[in-house]
Amino acid sequence: MVRYVSARYVGGEKTDSYYQHGQIYPLAIKVRFFRKRVSIYKRRGYYDDMQEGTLREFRDLESFERLFDITHEEGIE
Image 1: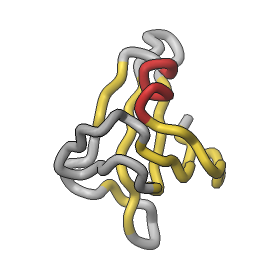
Image 2: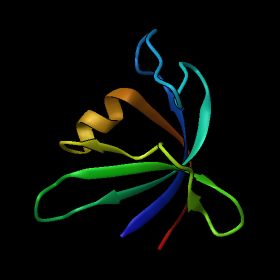
Image 3: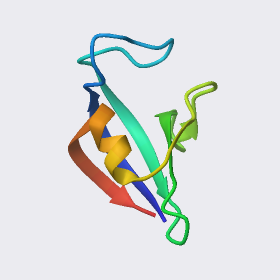
């Protein structure tokens, strides 16, 4: 299952090369049910393709929510 959301990066004052503090990004979130791992990437384009280099892996949904605050749910696929 993939969720499409808009989320604000709140991960402290440090930024990485693709996510900056306080900015809102269109994200795709994929949760693996059996392992509880979460993958996210920044979407771009008409078909919500992954923007190169933006894939991030998290241990679980709680660790994702420490860095991103979901502002708008856009859909589920």
